[in-house]
Image (cartoon, rainbow, N blue to C red; front, top):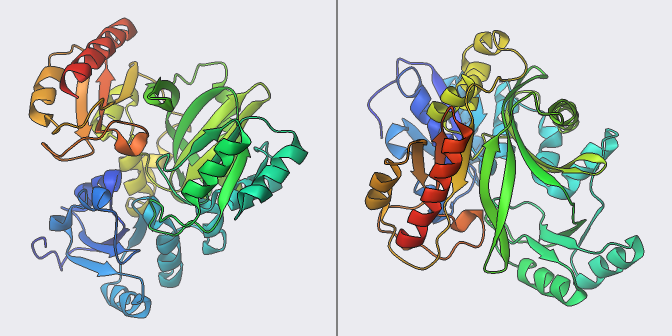
Amino acid sequence: MTEDHSDLPTVVLVDALSTGALLARRAQHRYRVVHVRSRSELPATFSASLPTELFAEDLTYPDRADDVLRRLGELEPVAVIAASEFGVEAADEIAAKLGLRGNDPALSHARRDKFHMMEAVAGAGLRTVRQRRGSTAEALLQWRREAGIGRTVIKPLDSAGSDDVFISSTEAEIRAAVRAIIGKTNLMLRTNEAALAQEYLVGDEYIVNSVSRDGRHWFTDAWISRKVTVRDRRIYDYEDLLSPDEPRFTEIRRYVTGVLDALGIANGPAHTELIYTADGPVLLETGARLSGLANPQALDRGTGVNQVDLTMDCFLGDGRALAAQPPVYARRQPERCVNLIAHRRTPLPAHTLRLALQQLPAFESVRFRIADQAMTTPTVDLNSSPGVVFLVHEDAAEIERSYRSLRRLEHQLL
């Protein structure tokens, strides 16, 4: 545990995993950081990212909700923040019970369950994907035939990070995907009792990150995603920071604003993924939490603002920094976020790889998802990517050259 900060105001972070740890590091010197776990157990991959040394207290909410709420009431926290996807529902509930800023728990299910998410967005009159949930392959196949849908996405209702997302073209593939999903414990440590079938959307994929306060939304960064086929799987290759001057940006921003309103994301960060189809933007999903791309130092270079600091301002700074910001960021420099691809099982040579990356002119930083010398597995999705590299440079051509050098290094070392 951290040193005694009992004289400081208390901030509660729920599941400070992955980039959520950045919130703890930002808060550690000015606040007493109390951590709440929304689950009795968390996946080992994510638990390793918990900055437990910064927590004054580390409480477990399930089966102890009354005790935890009583303790938090004694501490009189000034804010409760969902620090990762895991913590969205618990943070909504705790904030509401303590009378603190947050999002309406009545819509928590729509912020986590992808089926209900689409239903809420469609109910607001926005364009959404055709979908059906079901506990058997036959039920989903019957809907697919009746709807006249070809390529179909099959995935869990409430997982994350491209966990068990299958793109299926045949009935046999759909049956296999449903078999793989139903009954499995997903990344959120919940048992998949049903699967979600959606029509496959054709178009460019975009990521839009934002921070909201009292129903007003600020857009901190947006990216266009590129994918590559590796071992017959489509995986994330890289994301390029989007200029707000891009022709599609205004329409995308308007659409995402509607999505945030439909899902009741009135306070805090959000991470939205969408496809820009021939008919315009269509939602893939929105998470009421920090982006997995959150990297304050890199984003400050690229845009002058970052989602982490503005989230802190939303909950802890009276919104002054947000109010001083325009509703849309400005791109100062081109930026690329590259997902590392492991090509074989090998101990992660983190130190060697970092030294090699530092020789690239556009290199800004690298964040590994696993520990140095931990065994990599061939990358098949976002969760099996061993890390992410940020490239920032005033010359977009230099970013491209550094990217190509990075991929050559990767083949040598991973």
